[in-house]
Length: 129
Image (tube, rainbow, N blue to C red; front, side, top):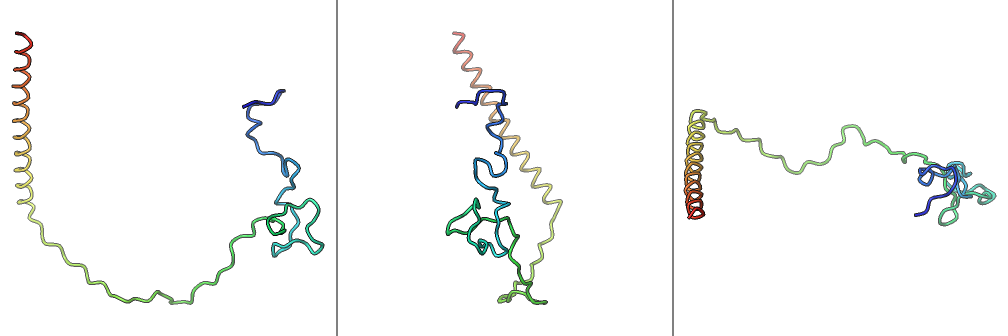
């Protein structure tokens, strides 16, 4: 990429051109009528023309809409069943089950740790011989 020589800053390349830059007219100031068509005399000289010969214009906003009638709702075809109630929870039994699961987890971890210590000891004794 080449940069222009002279006293300009490196950011000048990325700045927008002035309105209507590079010889093109500014779209916001192009003459249009309220329905988006060209003026009666055709397209004004220098107007920004799009496909089909229509002149570009500014944003006129979203199209108008009519609100639905009062009380309108979509049709209901099926009535959902009422939600079921959940069974009561036995908190004491849940705590006991959690403690048992924790003991099993710690036991399996302890067995795995003992096996790893034994394997490390065996490997070290082999290396020392």
